Length: 595
Image (cartoon, rainbow, N blue to C red; front, side, top):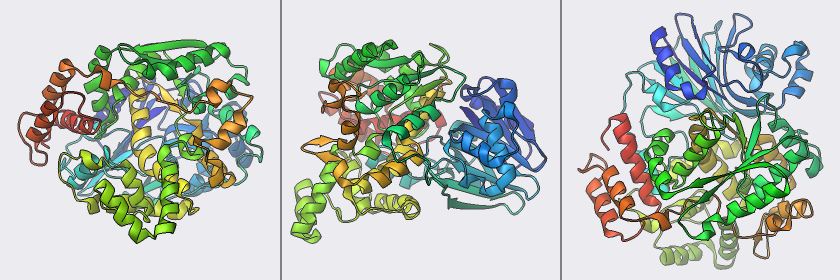
């Protein structure tokens, strides 16, 4: 929805410069606030109300100054509890949020539900706090060194300042092991991500920074009926005065959102992506999405991607992410956003099925995790570890769920550079420890993998790329199935028997939507998603492009000559693990640092 920026000193030119860095996040209005001790900036993308009513920084009294990026979805309940709300502004979530702050003070966070990055400044006590929503759909970064505190929705705005750009060598190791950096780390030692459910508190006078994890009350948020819960979920995510479109993948998650959306009587605009000059298996999903759009009588558009379009958007897409990333489909997502967003069809809100796999048991390795737990009981963990590690040339303790998760995510045999597995595992453990202690565990091998995917993957990779690529085109992505109250609702309702059955996944969800969605959606087991057919497209042109992107000489941290030789040695596509090195090369050039 917006972009937020700030720092703990006064500099009107610099806060304006930060706002310009995130212009794409809010082309409707730029606002600033300064009191001599802090500078705050906001870019507005107006969705729920008029530009005039939505301008920020938002303040109704001298004590609180609010910067809000995202959406609140429990407006109605908040209005009921607050009591003193202007009826004309009850649909403006920024206003409702502010009134909640006035009523509850810092405890406001216990009452709100949505996707958000919030900066809240208390002028009386000289404290500034940053919050990121429980599912991590809206990223926010901060820099802290030598008493200088800077924050922004994007790294590029922080780098508009003269800051220490020392590389975090552990982050490099983690990125080249997993393909991205989970947890709070970034490529830079002094720039961090706020964790999902995270709060950063900064004392302006004492120059002291503290971190903690917050929780909010989700009890009785949804009714006992799953059908009613899905209706409420989609209704709340349709709150907008702008058109809400939907990306269809041909899979169950986006299809059920379309089904629920159609019940609201909306004129529905849908999109899907297909690929040219490749094996037709990559277009199976697009064909089903087109069929579903026809059956639901939507205004549908298929966005076609060619091998040339992919290349033309390659560098820009990885640059836009701002962090190391191995996702091979980033150029596809960026081009899709360009067609749908401010320079194309001028949508401002797009619904996505992101998050369904992580609550209903959608990935094959979830079932593999169940098999590992069963085999460990039969063989004992010690014997199982010896056999499994010998066969896979790995070194993991599979009874430890963090290490088991890393086993499924690690590039394993694809490493081009050596790394210290202990550093990566320690980082994963430190990233999950506080969150899992807050949200609990079921001692269920599927749930254990899902909760780690939510905190370690979705908030650090999936939502980072969804937010930045689409917001680069002034387009907000909403992911109802990742909504925190809905996650908690589903987690309490489902058991391990609801995930897999006779080789099929998402058993509960398929049964729930049987006879509602067409059989060709509910009964299908194959799914490629929006996976780019780069293995089919890869040719001498691609190879030359990859080689041109890689630096010609070794850096202080990466032997680029080794990466170069690896690409040269491969007749075909060298694999997705090479993309994290391509992204690192692109970012090194963008940030003017040596890797």
